[in-house]
Image (tube, rainbow, N blue to C red; front, side, top):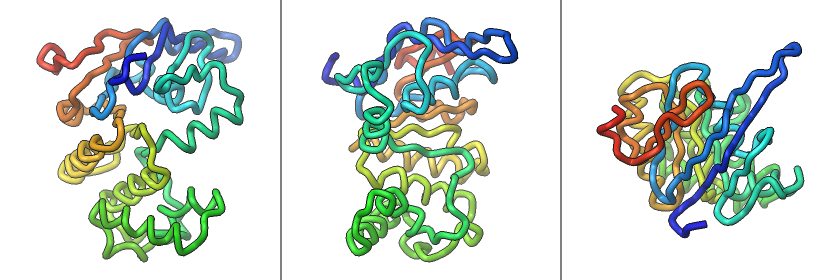
Amino acid sequence: MKKNIALYAENLTKIYNLEGVKVRALDGVTFSIPKNQVTAIIGPSGSGKSTLLHLIGCLDKPTSGKIYIGSTDTSKLTDKELAKLRNEKIGFVFQFFNLHPLLTAVENVELPETIKGVGEEQRREKALKLLKQVGLEERAFHYPNQLSGGEQQRTAIARALINNPEIILADEPTGNLDTKSGHEIMQLLINLKKNATVVVVTHDLDIARHAEHIVRLRDGKIEYADGFKKKLL
């Protein structure tokens, strides 16, 4: 594995059995994602984008093929080892934020550390620093229903950063936001590439234009995987 590659997928296939019908969501996909860059995974609905994100995020296992995160062959890991890798190396950002409605912004950011049993003072200090990083220090003690969509997504990004992940996976992170808020969130994700590799699944080509590297899917296959966006967008 090259030092500048954060993630590599080799001949990746995922087949679902839906009511006795086999659906090939991904079909022999091979590509790499460079370190400390923003990669956009794009393609029409049903192309396999979300399936691919779940596989590279170790939320699901491929039917065949391999995924390497750094030098680690994830196909050789047990479920427990996969969970450990996921918790330590990957941060997730979702379209609908997935914030706990009864927790404040800072409590939502702390949640992964709370589950791990980290002390209250230590996790609170870290969570407040992250909220400051995303421009929400003055909203730390507000509940999700008191925050705008953009503020909720900033909170979700801060939560994704709490474990200092090497890879940030964002599934349609701007899909539930207005255009202005969407571009602000994308700029925030771009700024994270100093310390992490950022992978964004999006159907929005305006958002994809912010990325340095593109993976385009169609019908479960790689249609394009390169950094030369002029050919694509």
